[in-house]
Length: 206
Image (cartoon, rainbow, N blue to C red; front, side, top):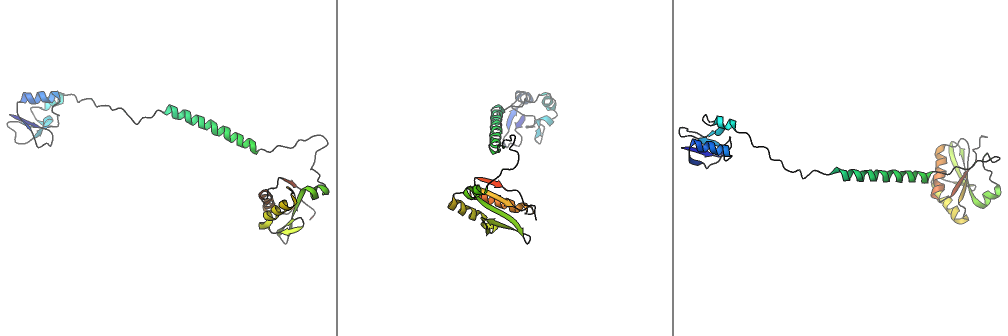
């Protein structure tokens, strides 16, 4: 009689005929890799390797692979729509922010071409005067004819704004003053809350 067991299994099905083994192989009860032992065999042999069963095992078609639904697949259509909406929103927001930062250019009309003229009376009533000039290779900052250190410039301007209620600045500097000193004054005026800054022409006389 024949014996059949699943590959590596300690238990086996016995008292089978060769025809029953072949029928079970065809029905799918046995796999070609399962082991069989015939009446004249002393060891277990895979069904597909047994001389009396290898042709039958070779003729069997392998079962089709089972296809499982892919539950991880995402529908990207909605995600693409959201990305397009966000892209349009950011483009419009950026464009609006750029328009807000644009400065209105002053109008030019006949007979009014040239720098604006500020009278001494207007300076005294509405403006805080700041001048920067070079002395011994270093810039000197003056606020209303008072020499002020660069790191104290913002606090000095803030105190003038508070005491005089002037929110406009008249900034004058010599031609040889470095750009870093000019930026220092502009930053200090902004930090002190100055609403308008008027630049006087640099002095080229020195």
